Image (cartoon, rainbow, N blue to C red; front, side):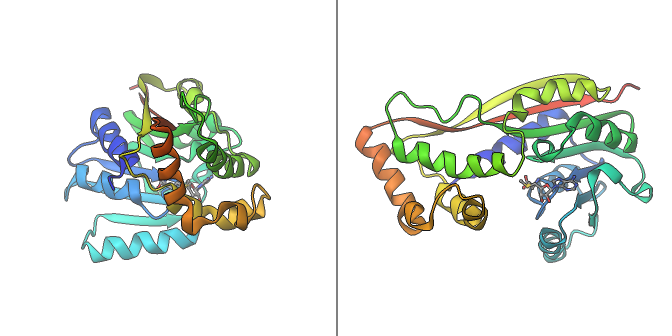
Length: 251
Ligand SMILES: C[S@@+](CC[C@H](N)C(=O)[O-])C[C@H]1O[C@@H](n2cnc3c(N)ncnc32)[C@H](O)[C@@H]1O
């Protein structure tokens, strides 16, 4: 099973110009999936700092860096709106699925850009549900599954239209937008996606928000039922739209 969104992240980071020797901050890094992709691009001469307000995923990120012997990666607990000055200046600030959780995303990026050198790069990747789920043929279980996950994220207070807002957020933060893109996650009867794994990971949150019951979801058989539905309908389904954008701090 390929990591479709991860591949999009790799392309976005490389196209935006994250490269050898750069010092990069990953905000809302969680367990560090984006941080480790950045580390590959910046190489041994570069440096990666991940920041997250939740201590639990940071421990996993630190363990992985240690296992890989990457001494140029550090992970710090803190709010991205109150970055500790000792982190210094960065060549680039990146983040994925994090602006959607900020009450005022433009203010958050503006405050972050103080830690960016003049001419430095800002790269964000954010999901957006405005155009999804999409399919020509009806796929009721796929639509319900989408509602379980994104309905939960929305009830938690996230902006599920952040992709469409991305360009204006970067501009309002005082940055010069260089490029904006949107890519789709396309599923067919032949493809396999990690929908059930995502629902399983989100299950406590879904139940807490009262979006669905455990019996309705039946997570152990979910992937099988989804594949069966796409196969029966011989349908193509778009589950996610993923926006990517990069901008520069005026020199
Ligand atoms: C959906 S997860 C994404 C994790 C990671 N960026 C990735 O794409 O794999 C969002 C992360 O952002 C963090 N986060 C959200 N708002 C934050 C803030 N204001 N300051 C620091 N971390 C924040 C959360 O704790 C969570 O780990």
